[in-house]
Image (cartoon, rainbow, N blue to C red):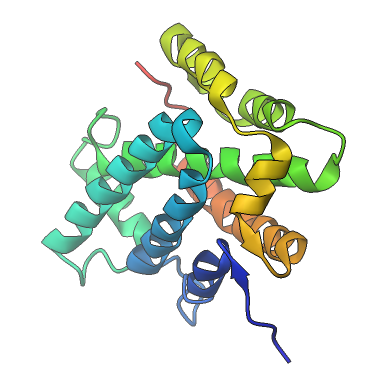
Length: 204
């Protein structure tokens, strides 16, 4: 019997169940809905994650707009990328492919942060976030973005307060489910982008 969750992860966990088609294809709208349902999680960080929230929201909107131009053709998430590859626009900074890559990287960062919270009870929020940043986003950021992150970390809430903001109920269980179920989907995005030579783009 499933327990009803009252944590902030609930909506994202529910929408993850619909991300794949019966034949295993990553579906555009459900994937974007998962990411959209992660926005309330990001909000719990307060001002420290304002840049991340804005970036995630912008990339969701970019991919949504692309999907809406032809919902049938772009039902599969990777069809958007294939179309831009054919048009030779995939590497553009405003491309949907670039949006998907940075959206996936932002989600990588959040998954790793929550993984750190679960694995290191003695770490502060700052330590969890900095370690997550180092192994996900840092190598793709230039000096300006890295500096902005360092400044933002000074605003991050303390660990106890942050965990209280995430909700009551099976918090550790929901957090673990979020990490375990979302990680393979993000890895699949990276594997596809790498297969077409588009997983290495950096911030300009």
